Image (cartoon, rainbow, N blue to C red; front, side, top):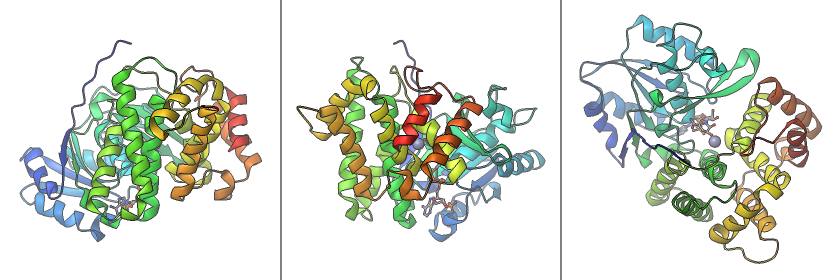
Amino acid sequence: MQFQFQNPTRILFGEGQISEISQQIPADAKVLVLYGGGSIKRNGIYAQVEQALQHHQWLEFDGIEPNPTVETLDNAVKLVKAEQIDFLLAVGGGSVIDGTKYVAAAAKYQGYGWDILDGKAQVTDAMPLGCILTLPATGSESNAAAVVTRVATAEKKAFFSPLVYPQFAVLDPTAMSTLPDRQLRNGIVDAFVHICEQYLTFPAGNMVQDGYAESLLRNLIVLAQQFDDRRQPQWQANLMYTANQALNGLIGAGVAHDWATHAIGHELTTLYGLDHAQTLAVVQPALLRQQYVHKHDKLVQMGKNVFGIDGKDAAQQCINAIEALYRELGVGTKLDDYGVNRLDAVEQVSAALAEHGQLPLGEHGHIELADCEQILQRA
Ligand code: NZQ
Ligand code: ZN
């Protein structure tokens, strides 16, 4: 495949790097600091931001919720316009960073911001943004994607634009000190599935992308096995950098992509409120079983190079190993684990996918409504 690859986000990695943002943001910029429900006030990150921005003019916008909503974010867009803000600083996890990307694009768009998610409008201009990551999982800190929910219509959609790459991303693993175990588990699962969405398709002889993807997958398996060490700086640093590399565009350049697990998962979050990573743990094993024939060869390769599985039924064993990885980590892989009625999910999720124009799905574009129903029946 022909491809171009450029990731413009400057990574500032390591303890103490928050102070560096004062150098990265233009001295005369009026900054809006965006954050979530307040975790940054409890772990000292907010105080470090205050310190770093002491010579800047800045305002704040809080309350960006997990799975950020356009309803909330449009208030930030209003503030940006009213206060003539010229730089956005996101401090949080994927939700805050995605939400800030939306604000960056919507503030420069004349119509209703949701048009960007709906595909009615392309992003042609965006405000500059930077971010401080507090939850390693999504890769949003150095990619061009954002996922936003619209409560009014129960939709969760993504948009992509090179204009919303953060200019810089602070990856200070000490920000993870207050993360609940649930979010650490989510981070491992989300990053694992991101790699699979770009790797677990069909063999195409991409030695660099495959080799790097396998190496990142093995990291995540080790981190899951060493979950008892999750409060150790080295464990945290390794998760933070692995999750970052999993979705910064590198392993996805020049290869086929899947993303069906994510599309189905987004509907599960909207309908039943599951965490993003929980939906992935539920959908992916079921999807791999339903798409077994098409993914067989890559499952065998993954089994061998990632899990050390050889011989008969290697593809099947690879799927079992993926599911066991999530379960042993403590992330449920069945709708039952979350009290979601399967029959209801089969009906509602499939209907939502069709209604939201998400079908067909998968690397071959051949996952249709009936396939989604079968996947959810297995979930
Ligand atoms: O809001 P606060 O108080 O900060 O609490 C958050 C939130 O409740 C908390 N948290 C974050 N950092 C913390 C912390 N708590 C204690 N200590 C810290 N250091 O964690 C909770 C979840 O945060 P959230 O940002 O929602 O989690 P995550 O990073 O998993 O982001 C999920 C969102 O990203 C989207 C998902 O769909 C979902 O909306 N995704 C974005 C992608 C992208 N842009 O490329 C790709 C992904 O596949 C994903 O779809
Ligand atoms: Zn994800």
